[in-house]
Length: 327
Image (cartoon, rainbow, N blue to C red; front, side, top):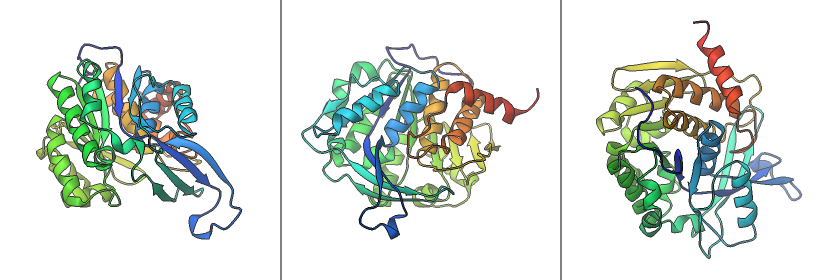
C-alpha cells in the first residue's frame, strides 16, 4: 500500500479528541499520603497523537474543546509548543478534564480520572460542522473510541467527522481504546461497527480491547474480525515486543525494538498512531509508515507522561533502519 493521495488542504493530519491536564504523582497511588509530590503536564490521546504527527513531519491541527479555567492557557501553550496548530480549538465554560498518573520504572501505571462534565465532553456535531472545510480537505484524520465515549454528543461528533472524511476520500485512523469507566461494551461495539467501514488504519490492543470489542484474545483472530467489520488495515499491539499487521494481503508479526531504559508507556500507542498516520499522509508506504510508528512508540517510553518524550523523526528513522537491518 502506497501513501495517501488525497489533495492536501492546509494540514496533513487533523486530530479530533480530548486534551487532558496530567498530574504526575511522585509515588504509587496506593501509598500516596499527605505531602506527596506531583507535577502538572498535559496529555490525552488526541494531544499525544498530534504531537507525534508533528514530530514525524506532518502539518497538524488539533480539533478539540478546552475549558475556560486557569489551566487552559498553559494547556494550549504546551500544545502550540509541540508544533500543533491550535487555531481551531473551541472553548466551553467548563473545567478541563484531568487525570492523576503514577508510573514506576518498569512502566506499570495507575490512573485516576476527573472528566465528567468536562469541556472536552461538550464536543458535538455543531463543532464538526464548523470544521467541515478542514475535514473535507485533509488527507488524514485521527480519532478514537475514548473521544466517542465522552458523551452522547461526542459520539455523534466522531461519527460525523468519520463520515465527512470518508466521503471526501480522506484516510481515517481510529483507535477503539475501550475504557469501561467511560462506556459499556455494547455501546463501544456499536460505535466500532459504525466507524470501522470508514477506517483506513485501525490500531488496537490485544487482549484488552480485543476481548471487550470482538470477543477474542488471539491477535490474529482479532485482526480478522476487525477487518470483517470493514477496517482496511489493522495494527494489533500484542505485548511489549510485537505488533501484528493485517492489510488484507495477510497477517504478519512485526518485532518492536526494545527500549533499554523504559520509564512510562503512557501514550506509546498514540505515538504509534500519530507517527504512522503522518507518514502515510506524507506519502510513505504502509510498511515504512508502520516501521516508523513502531520505532517512535518504542522511543517514547523513555519519557514520563503522554508527551514526556516525543521522539524527533531523525531518531525514529535511525531506529527503524537499525531494526530493519542491512539491505
